[in-house]
Length: 195
Length: 195
Image (cartoon, rainbow over all chains, first blue to last red; front, side):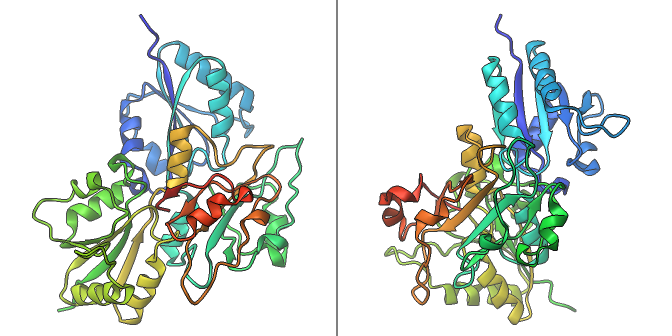
């Protein structure tokens, strides 16, 4: 019998449970196990059926993150046990976060992966504040950049030239370099949100 | 008695009804009238309760679009009649489309406006194709630009410099200049989708 194990990379959106997609909500209802991180809100975690096991890979007891390699191995192990695994991530799984690294690792190990997109926090902030990301005649495009980088690969973006003509630079993902960018007067109005 | 009329700018997402947010779905269920355009899929329109009036402002009988000024006036008129109006737009209401223009006009006329963000098509395409928008070490940011501009304000973006180091340029909104950009070998891989 084929192994029905599968990993769903699910975007939880910006935190408001009402901004989950119908598909994400269904994935939570049907999951055998949820693997989640610190950018998923308590309100969303509260929607998960009480009997569904959940594994927090965002923080360990002494505030250490679970290394990415361990998360990858955990997802493979659960899928090989035949579980429907929901890997729940703040924002959108393929916009920042490490959804694509996890998907690539899983596929290399023969695990079936599906992704459920989510509302990005930039969109949610724009809607909440009434500040558009684009506006004809003022901004005909928008850029999302990370404020965080892996050790092997320094950010090569100086934030100043990112302010192109009529291009908005609305937000920055994650912690890391956030203060550096926010302190730079060319760095725009930077907030900390999941993607 | 205060007028309860209000306009909800609702992002319908990329077309799959399952990628509506729970909040968008509720707005459709509770609306007194739906004003929608051509980028909203038939499958999503089919979710609207059969008794809810709907107004298509995407095309008129002889394939003319309703001018933006008329859409703005229609929304004001419906809200002043005390209606809960859902202005349903493809993708995200504040990322391309003209959500921000409509919101500004409505607010200038004293109408209460709320926005419900949606999944952008770029996220949905990334999820469907398994191609991430960002990936550590390869792309630490992403740009969304329009391929369309208003007559008074030409696009001043040459697409070539938009390919910064480790920046993805995944998609283009609307029709308009699409072919020009797609034919440009520096213009990236451009698809036609709602924002």
